[in-house]
Image 1 (tube, rainbow, N blue to C red):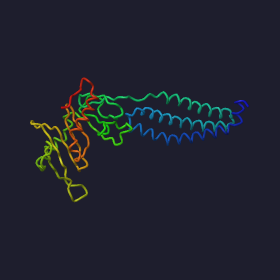
Image 2 (cartoon, rainbow, N blue to C red):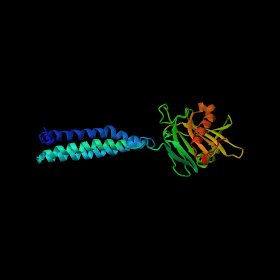
Image 3 (tube, one colour):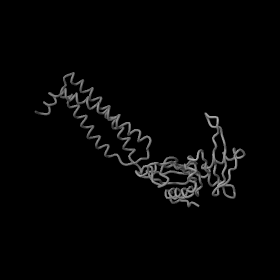
Image 4 (cartoon, helix red, strand yellow):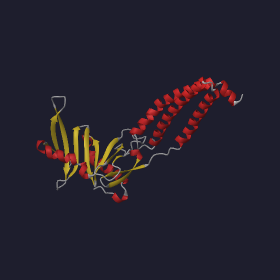
Amino acid sequence: MSITSLFHRRARWFVALAWLLLVLAVFAGLAVGIGSAIDAFYHPQHEWAGYDRALVHFLELTFWIGAAVAVGSSLALVLRWRIAASASVVVCWGGLVLGGTVYLNSVPKGPQYFDRYAGEMHFRIPWQYGPSGSDSPAPNGFYVSLCVDSLLATYDEACREGKQVSVYPPKLGFASEELSWQRRQNAMKQAGSRGGYEIYTYSIPAEGTRGELTLTYYRRANAEGQLLKWVTCYRTDSCERRTLMGGYVLVYNTTESAFSEWDATDQKLAALVDSWAVPSTTVNSP
C-alpha cells in the first residue's frame, strides 16, 4: 500500500490522532509546563532556568499548532481532501517532534557565576547560591542562600535547610538599627552584658493580645561609638544578626542559644564572601 493510498484510506484515523495529540499537548502543558514556569520564575539563577523557559515556550507553540492541525485536518476531511487532512497531521506533528528535539537540545546552560555588588564592592558568586540583588554599583547590597553550618549552597543536594545571608555596605547595613537606637534608647532597659555585648530590652504592645512583646538587643560598638555588631532577638529562637566585617555588613538569622558560635559563624561566612570578591575589591575581615 502506497503512502498516498494510506493517507486516503485512513484519513479519519489521522484526524482522530490529531485531536488525541492535542489533548496530550494540553496535559503536557498542565503537568510539565506549569511546573517549569514556576521553577523559571522562582529560581531564575538556576543553570537550567533557560531550559525551563524554552520548554514552556515550546509547549505553548505545540498547543497552538496542534489546535490548528486538529481543526484544519477536520475541515479538510469534511471537504473530502482526505490526503491533505492526513498529510497535514503527519507533517506538522513530525516537524514539532524533530524541531522541538533540536531546539531543546540546543538550549545552553545558564551563567555559572553572577556579578553582584554591595555598594562599590564587586563580587562574582556561583549560581548555586542563588545570588540576588544589585548587579551594578549601588547603595544596596545582595543576598545569597546557603546552609550556614556547612556553607553549602542552597542548590547543593547536601544542603537541606538553606537560609538567606545578606551583604550590605556599612552605611545601609546598620541604618535602621542606628535609627532604632536613637529613637528608643531612653525607653530601653539595660539588661547587663555578655561576651563584650551590651544587652538591652525594649517592650512593645503585642498585636491581638493584652500582653507585650519584649525585644532583646545585643549591641557592640568600638571606643568611638561606631556600631560593630547588632543582634535583635524577637524570641530566643529567632534573632537577626548584623556584623561589620571589613567593608561590608553581614546579615543573617540566628538564635540566642547559639551565642557562643556567633563570632565564629561571622568569620566563616566572611571567608566565603571574601572568596567571591573580585580581586580589585577584596577586603580582609578584621
